[in-house]
Image 1: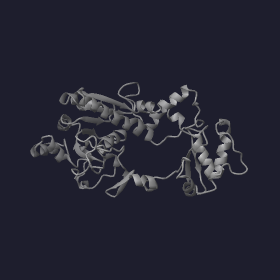
Image 2: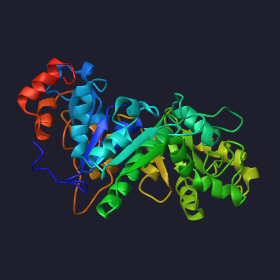
Image 3: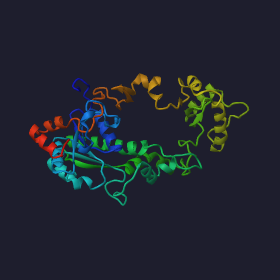
Image 4: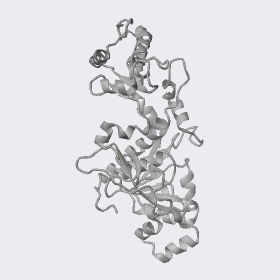
Length: 388
């Protein structure tokens, strides 16, 4: 039950999510974590009643209820529009034009609910030469210039998983767009479409790099700059046990603290001027030689509780157990599964994990009853294959 849990800042907001993958579900998860009532419209063909009552393994779907619908059937379209009529927002992540062909596009939905915020999540956007075509995170990063800047000098670009594109430039931007449009509706504006494209979001995330280029403080070559691994005091180093430290001693006083605590430079190296990029290769070799003299955890014990700006590079299993993250509850356990806690934090409307990830169609009867479908009507829709 969720009645006794904190309401969250988006309490009272209902969101309809047309099931997709990646950034769309992430945006819906963010809204659910913040207290919104998110209804996930899953494919009727994915429904397996035998799985009901157990958490689905996909954590991106947490916090929702699910209805199983055949969007290609007239009855399925009727169900979605009935859900939309009482909702505040909708999320869809199909290629441009797909929801229009299904009869649940922006015009269809705004006709039954003029205050609806219709969120569209794509990689390329709703228009432009690439809009009709498939794509993935790595391609969106490539097109915006972001991928060019990630990697070692004189080596090929390195994909940063899909955190930067799908989730940072995509899902997070969609969540911000939806909340912003909802705020406008609460102020008296009509509903509208939010066109969230990963290429747009990643471009915005790279604004500082464009600014640094204009200031003459960033070179286009990869891996030679202050924040891309070019500087020896902003990089990772292998330790004696084969594990790694992350060093981020950018400011002079933090670097001085790092030097003082470690005894850098190791004999017989010289204390070269770190502000001269010409010295960076030699400094990196010296730091690398020093860090290989102790294990990662030995260096952590020496440096962590200081302003040296050094942290151990933890793996996925280790991260939730780190004392700082554990003390803040950055990771929580729900139904035996350790997972990231909702973020950010609110002093007056705290967030929480309200529901485990549902299996497709787990709440079909419950949700259809809420929008006024009587049992006989639900049974008829199920017999016709429109819902499951």
